[in-house]
Length: 346
Image 1 (cartoon, rainbow, N blue to C red):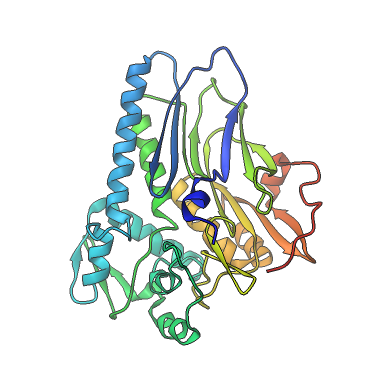
Image 2: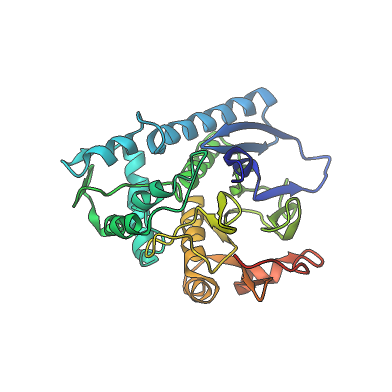
């Protein structure tokens, strides 16, 4: 297996600003939410000390969200909900309720291709352990009956599961919410130019300092340290889902962590999906859902959504192919010979 820590430390998408005498970035990088998180501020009129204080406040908010949504912490509220919501209604923190509401909305919008109840199946694969493995097919079949976002009831302040066995996993949406909250804190502090990058999911806001100067590079899914290409981004969110983030091999077959909620097995139609939209939380969930849909159905879905752009990398005849939404393809610049290699289909 590719070591979990190593896979999570790879930045899937990164931003790079052209050199300018006016640019004076102030940044911090921390390990948070099982990945590298970098916050960069560009702002005139504030001292470095003031900017560092704002960054600390943004990180504090992200840490609060992580403490609510971390499935691998017994003290998190999401763990408490998973243990108790089938027995009785559970009062939910307002921030977590915001995530749950959007999660259910995204599950409905994508017809379950993104489903926050995926936890019951995801636990079987044990991707977070040192020894992930392909689960017994009967176990997968049994646990599929717990994968249905309609089994989750939400009212103003409480959550209830309709049956025992439902297990929420917010890994496909919580990180995006944390990024959005960090940007909210930064904007409230009077900073108008910043970037929050959490392991390849990012959101940027801009002023004249960086307008037209920030390029987003999409990592090559089969060649470490190489890139599919790049595009210019001023103010939006970007999220990438790929089969190279967390995976293991068994009997020479690659098994990755992006599971199809309808089958319980890794989705096989895409290699990576990059989504661009306003909010990081939506980009996070949509990247997962489109990965499950595949290139054909995924592009139809994207083209019916306002203000959403996407790049889908998939494998055909042992070579990588790309398809993207019209607006993104107008500004995307592919790296030379990015798809020249031949890759074994797995």
